[in-house]
Image (cartoon, rainbow, N blue to C red; front, side, top):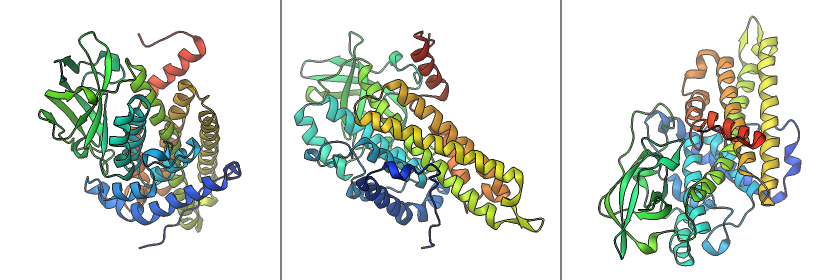
Length: 392
């Protein structure tokens, strides 16, 4: 295996703000990414293939549901630890981080938060180890940024519900064993349910021909008269509050993850600029190259401080949805800008699979859209500072 050359930028010594436990956790995930993800991810991306064997390895490392209690087989860590894990995973690939984000924030978190004890004991330990894989069904073909318009329905049939509808752009869809799905009852109230693989009428076709997140499984969840036992309904939540709380957790992880993608691109560009000679000197000696590198490092540093602060607030249960939204929007846009500037420094080499930059760029084009588009997050901030909703 070729040696992984990577020096993470830390211009403002954010490392000093971390505990020894944080550093141990980050080192463990960084080493795993170097060993298990980096050597295979370019081929997996080119082949449009999700490296499924990584699920069990992530489970063994405690990557799934790390901030949930140990009694359910999880690590019981804080939210900064979760963020650092997401940073290292996305340094490897956004698709790998997406799989972990969905399993953790969109499947395990709602079962823990809104489920009963029987549901927690049944599903969480197996999700934590990667024995089973989860998906999250909210987005529909005609309802993305406005999930309140969903048309997926459940009807009360006495001893069970009958589920009909479809969800789209679902990470882990075709490989999932369970899906946390949000649907409206006869009164129009949104409820969460756990749909299991093998239930008659439940299919999950995969979406192909993607230019982005190619090393990730994306698909649909289709429900045709699926019988859902009433014990599979999440009892402690009604309305959009439930899925939006899940999205807050996912957006928090994405804000950290995007920093990892940016750091990987920056480090690649800096290393290349020092080694690539033109006009008898390294291109790092030219003013415009230094300008690019200096601006990239500045934006990465700002993003590092942003997620660290929102992480401390989340640990204290004080981080607002709007604060998390700002971090997601800022950091993904930052990462995409850094990736594009890094690609320019590498010139034509930047589009090849010999370097990770073009893969990061294409992945981030999805990340800037999912879990709330860049524009929607701007409006969330706008509403928060003006008190006026601009969505309608």
